[in-house]
Length: 81
Image 1 (cartoon, rainbow, N blue to C red):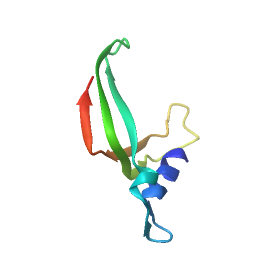
Image 2: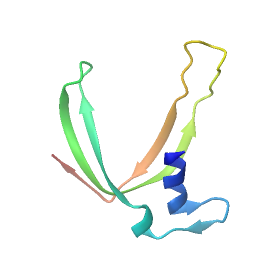
Image 3: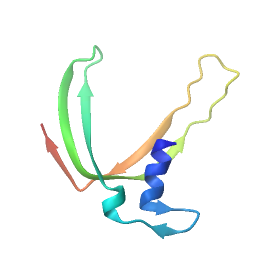
Image 4: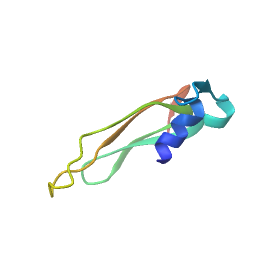
């Protein structure tokens, strides 16, 4: 719900209204880790907003089935740290 609420701030599909950039653009971090959780790289992303969200098919009857959510994030600028 948090991701969908953030996306709604930039464009509300129900009302077809575009929001103010000052309300939906946020600064974020992307961190890349090795399989044993050692940080290799980090970027600070400026002016981020979500342009798309999708969910995988989730089957609650399968014990090993996970619900996967994919978000597409646009940004104005990225700086490695």
